Image 1 (cartoon, rainbow, N blue to C red):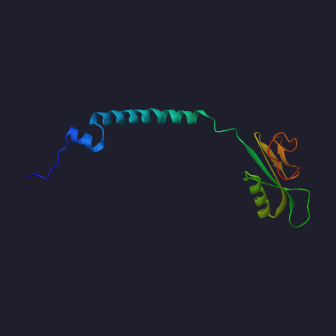
Image 2: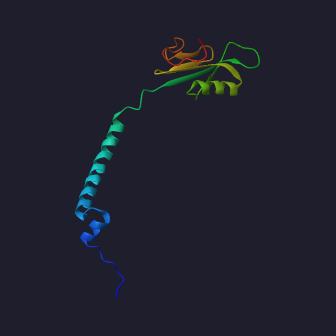
Image 3: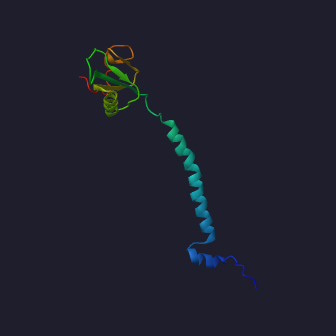
Length: 132
């Protein structure tokens, strides 16, 4: 006597799982074919949309917390949100944070603060913060 199991007969398999072997293979092929087709389509759709327009930021701290105000401020690189700018100014010992963002490069100068790329004052249309 051997202990090897034999594959169940087709009728027995049908009774166990409720569908025939042929139907099981057919359904598996449909699901597999559908998955094989949808994955490349999803990838191509996600790559077709641009990631968005570039955004430029400016964080300027207007007054030192201690000592005389010389008329010059402090430009800080890195913050991408008004609250990050306020925190960075505070950590650096400055007050009166100004934060701007926009679709064009923004220059930050110690005398002028945040200015658009052409040096014509605060950027227009981009989330000003701090200064009216």
